[in-house]
Image (cartoon, rainbow, N blue to C red; front, side, top):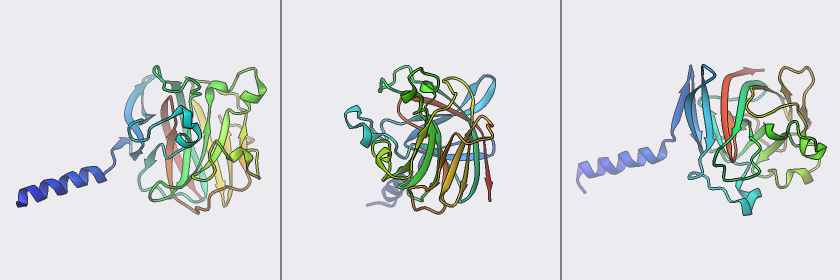
Length: 231
């Protein structure tokens, strides 16, 4: 094989190995099974993130297996163990959502390991934040731990509750603040003094890792003002 051909093959290999990235202000994000772009929303530049169905297909008949995965814009060079992660999020339902029960799934992943095969996550479902049914309303916030404790089985695990209610809705900015200390994590919403959900024992065994802006199926997610304070 000629040198030019070898170089071309090598170059293609680099393109495959490198994940796409997006940059907002002074923060750069690696896109993991999501698409990302800088969008103009309400007159300001924010990060728009949506699930990439080509990178990670969705199957409604295999719901438990194809949701709650590594679906985030991963903050480059982030290494978070303990402290606070805060971000403002806004979610809408995609016009052509492939899942009729899309609830605007949006939140944070943290302590993501190097190959995206394990992490913790706390996220919200704004569409059901104000519904009348108290059972459904109580699913407005959820915690899960990837890969062993996802939506389909964490509810049967000891140490709950892993979900809670919150006064939230679609198409509105919501402040999420996660405070992490050791194996405990608490989610605060919209600057409330008391946590909306507290996890006394995180299910994963990761001590530290990256931070990601997380979305799931049918969600048009927007993020701004990501702040990380290490402890």
